[in-house]
Image (tube, rainbow, N blue to C red; front, side, top):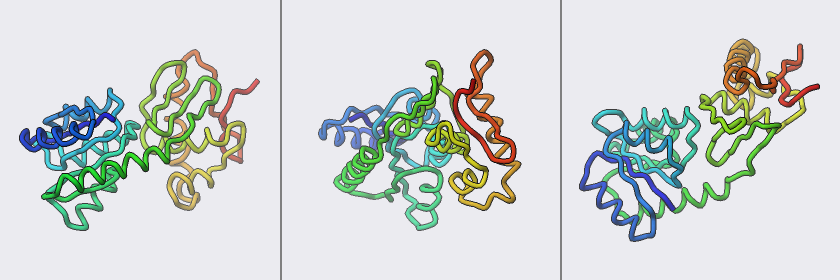
Length: 224
């Protein structure tokens, strides 16, 4: 198992890394938000331990940015701020768990193992339509070997469409699945996100995959 620790306190980072390595984890350390963001974006980790208070970039910003770019690695956020409101903010930003300082290493290890079990249980088969693939485990979207960086909404829309290939998916269904809201006030917003998604996954020279079915919704697949 490979873990990334994003922690500016070098002593704390060394102690966490030492403990995890004794548990047979391979551990990388980043001492700033920007460094951690870059490492997490280019390397497939099994878990990320992220300190909320970083000198250059708030851990909330780092977490939210990773999720918006499709990085689905389980994130355990650490913080001296342990109020209910702070935990909610961290989880809303995309963290999978939130552990208040000070803590015992045994609890941190137990939470990491729980995240890894949950990740393994929810690991899904890679979805493929034509030359487009979506990996629910890593949240990576590729077409013809090219990786696309999607926003959270774009990714969610594409996943719904890819789970119903060759079928018309109505705006009401997208509104319910992606926004958990009624479609009446979201029609224009859905169209904008789908348009942005098209521009990303249908670069010049490639056959279109997302088709608008007038009065009904959208269909994903190659057409004659």
